[in-house]
Length: 309
Image (cartoon, rainbow, N blue to C red; front, side, top):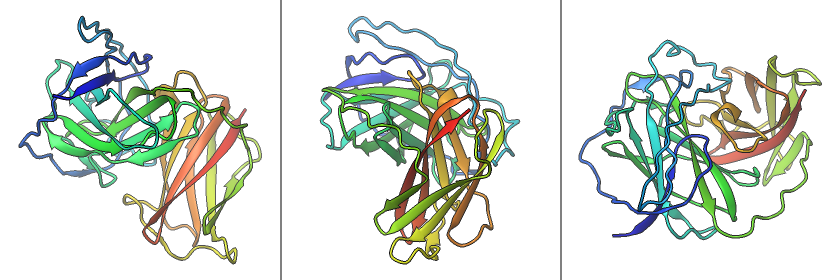
């Protein structure tokens, strides 16, 4: 039996503890009813201490997923689920490690069925708390409430994982998980508010609908994508997870919580090489944005900082 650290959901600080975890696979199969995104809903989580004498603390947490243009399920009931993260007791930066996420109902029973949204049963955003490392991955459902995936942690330090899923027939939910990679964290680079970035053979330009972003006000964000060789608009963009693009936004905060998380979806029918988003920023502060786009089968991630007044 392998020895694992167990990390648990929601915004409390993670205390890494040793525990035994089974990788038993269930024969159950997920429900794959297509659905659109609804607002995030209240949920509870646990904070575990020493695994030999477990200490569990329930923390009701309310938040919402800002910036979604898909709100047809906004009146669905909340799932009030909890998610628990299990990861190996030894994590080495830049070496893939197995992660397991178990989703249970408020009585602690595994949840069997989930709805597909944005072409997946779960979207997992893995970000270092200093925002230097970002990854958007999709765990595989193994049945009986368990999702599994391999993940890389690029450097030592604290990480926050935003697990985005939809219990069958319920509203979409985001559970916040914490992990820690041993070692000294690298120094965080200075915040760069530049609006142009070259990413390999792609040049990304960020345009805003107004020169100053105000907290609580709707803002139009445009990612202008060009071929770096000739500055011409890209003509080889493909859909990514059923959309023209996806945008994850996080507010610089410590600790990171669900309230700091925004997930926006691209508007349809925009000009060639342009990906448009409409969202709002709930509070003043510094935010980092990761726009993700599919250029002929290669996922391009364009990251920018913005200052919200």
